[in-house]
Image (tube, rainbow, N blue to C red; front, side, top):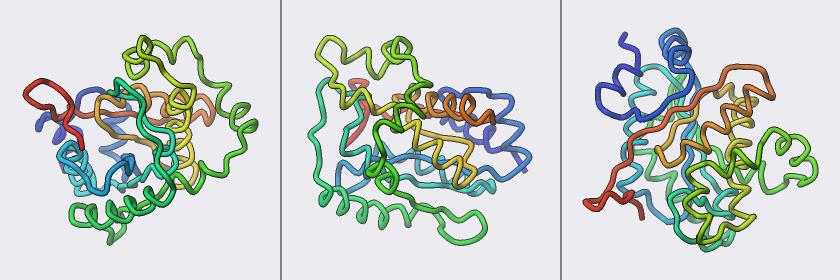
Length: 232
C-alpha cells in the first residue's frame, strides 16, 4: 500500500513536517493514532476546514486512527493565530451547543466504525479542572518565553497587543497533544499551517517530557483571492 505521506504530498496537502523521514517510516510501518483540533467558535464547520477533513479521510483510509479534538476548553481562551484582535470569549453553554453541531457534521466525512474508527474528545474534560500551579511546574517549565515570542502566531500581535490569556494558548494546545499521547498513544498532530508553532510545541513537549517520538504536520491553507485564510 502507498504511504499516506506520498498521497498527501502528491495532492498538495503538506506544507511543513518535523522529523519527516522518521514520520514517513512510522506511517508506512504501523497504524498511527493522530489528531486534528477544531475550536467550536461557530455552530458549523466552514470551507477552511475542508482540507483537514479530507486529509483525515486519507489518513483513515490508509489504516491510521483519527482523533477529533473539540476545543471546548481552549475556545474559552481564543486562539491568537492569524488574528489581529482578541477573540470574544464564549460561554460554556454556547460552546456545548457548537460541539454538538460539529459532531453531527463530522460524522458525514469520517467513519466511526471499525478498528481504526474515529473518536471525538473534548479538551474541556481535562483543561477546565487543571490546577494552575501544578500546570506551570509540570508543563510551563518546558517552554521558553523568548522562543514563544518569535512564533508567527504571536509576532503578528505584538504591536496591537497580546493578552496573557491568549499567550497561554500554545501551552494549552501542547498539553492537549501530551494528554492524547498518554491516553491514546497519539503520536501525530495535523493542522493548518497557521498552527505550525502550536503544533510543533506539542511535539517538542512530548519528546522532552516523555522521551518518545512525536510528530507535527501542517497543511496548505485555503485562502481567499486576497490571500486571507478562509474561515467563518
